[in-house]
Image (cartoon, rainbow, N blue to C red; front, side):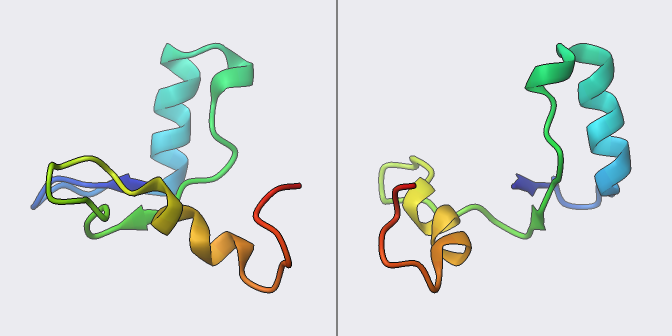
Length: 64
């Protein structure tokens, strides 16, 4: 998931292409989701469990 700066624009393909230029192939993301803002707790840390929640809907456990 990516949160863009105000006024910035980028497509999923542009972000993946940028990663392919700067990272090893196996480290590059296969897909990118653009969100307006990342959920944060009061100290400013990103709440990863809230980012993962939509992908685990309909599953009994959150571990494979």
